[in-house]
Length: 188
Image (cartoon, rainbow, N blue to C red; front, side, top):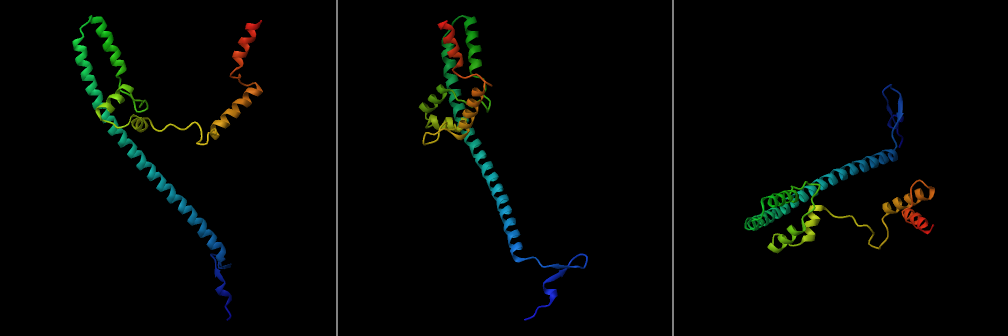
């Protein structure tokens, strides 16, 4: 079976003969394109997943905040009744009201820390089941300081080693250096 030379060559833009692309190269290029496409698809999926998680987190926070707000209003109503019964001098009452105002300022989203008394009251009333879970929902999870096997985290180790190096080279003071200098001055 003889093939003509034109089967192996194709004409280029300048009417010159260009050799046909090798199958290995075409396969390799297609493989690379597929890998890139898969990475893009994975990025899109992960972004969508993060958006859904954030949405769910915000919804859960809204529900918990609504429950706690209802408990807070009930507690404030009880405290108002108690304050009405306690009649004392006007000046002291004004100071107490000011202090209560300061205590009860609306918390921003960043300061999502929850009042302990409010959480306990909410649990007693049955509005929430677990204080720990509610704190985790509102404040977010705290990152562990150590690994499960008790080892130090990589970033913490890097920071510590860099700090120790600075101390050795004399760029920063040693943590216990001030105490040591104080002891030397006392001895003299």
